[in-house]
Image (spheres, rainbow, N blue to C red):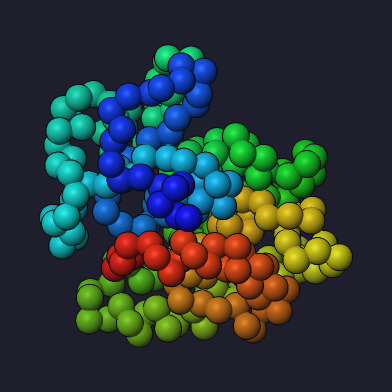
Length: 230
């Protein structure tokens, strides 16, 4: 059950000092925190999902971010951050990509060798480039031009990255995943990107196999998670 894994309510106490607990802070959006949430869900690990309002983006539900900013908890003055409490001591991990990679290593989703980890990193860095292109080509456009800009991005820019990913997957031909024989951070990240961009990857059959396998594993979460404009 998804509600067994994700909580938006604070328990207020840690019953076992040896247990590691996780608290993810972000806006009441998917955006830069959704991949981290997906990692928790796939790994079947409980975490507290602390969500903040973002009035400038039209998101009025959630806690007041000013309160946590004033607490000094945010190293860069922004979210997401991840609080990791273990042995009675709390550590803060900031920056979305650092959080994602920390969680993947924490839960055994970073490959079984340095070469597999390197391939995962190649895919993650390819996605960074893709999202940077998305910002330049779509996000900064006037709102009334974004729909057309998105169509152009999906038809012209995305295929260049997807072609490389499709070849990477073809090299791991005896599996449904980019590396090894089970889901890793690379698979979850590519699935999340396609999901956010509403891309089904059908023009790239190898990526499509990955997306189908991940989608099946996350079916309950995807169908029940909160709605979000992005």
